[in-house]
Structure formats: structure tokens, C-alpha cells
Length: 156
Ligand SMILES: [Zn+2]
Image (cartoon, rainbow, N blue to C red):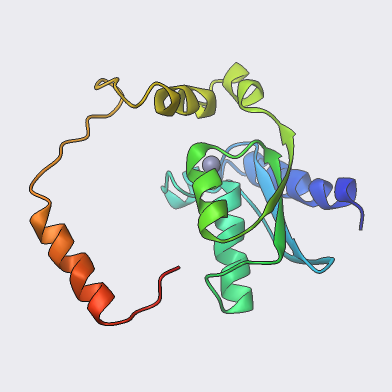
């Protein structure tokens, strides 16, 4: 399969689930060594889950299928430019290459807020109407982290 054919898998999946009112017009496919591991689409409405974006759904599916949290060596095809959450999930999963069709401004044209969130982050998250981050005492978290580090657990 070439890049366009793989991207079409995500587009077809998105067309199917958006017609069933399961979520927005976004699909994704994950490939490893030329094999399609997962194809998914946006399931925000079906799952009542604001994090059920196509890329996150595809990452979850690929991780289940491969039995790992580490998708090193995989590539992801996303019909839309990943939002900040999905971009982070892709980086957490150690995926090093993203193929995209749509851009954030394309999603914004039909009312999605990807570009708005990118601007919020670029503006150093100072807009308290969007999100207020309140810093409490750091000590409990530091103690938790130190316990984890002392247990020599995996850092991923
Ligand atoms: Zn997303």
C-alpha cells in the first residue's frame, strides 16, 4: 500500500463513523514495517469521551494489538493535523513520523478548536477563561515521584 492508500483507510473509517454520528470527520491509521496495525476514527460522541480522537483511538488499538505502550518503528497517518493532545500522545508512543492531510485551520473552518488550542499554548496559556492552572503545594507530588524513582520502575 502506498501513502495515499493508507490515508484512504482513515478517510473511509471516518466517513463510516461520522455517518453513524459516532464522531467528527477524522481518521487515522498506524503502520509498522509496511503492515497496517490499526485503523480508527473519532469516537468522541459514541463513547462520550472527549479524548477519543482518531489518533488516540488508533494508538490504543495498536498498543493492544502489539501488547506494548511503545510504538517505536510505527508511523501514523492522520486525516487531520493532530491536535495538541494527539500530538502529545504520538510523541508519548514514540512514533517518529506523522503523515497528514488536513491542517488545523481546515478543521477550524468547520468549527473545531485545534488551532485555538495551539494558539492558547503558544500564548503561554495565560488566558484564564480557557483554562486556569492552579499550583498547590509541590511536596506531595515530589514525594510520590521519589517513591516511584526509588522503586526503579520503568520511565517511558
Ligand atoms: Zn486530537
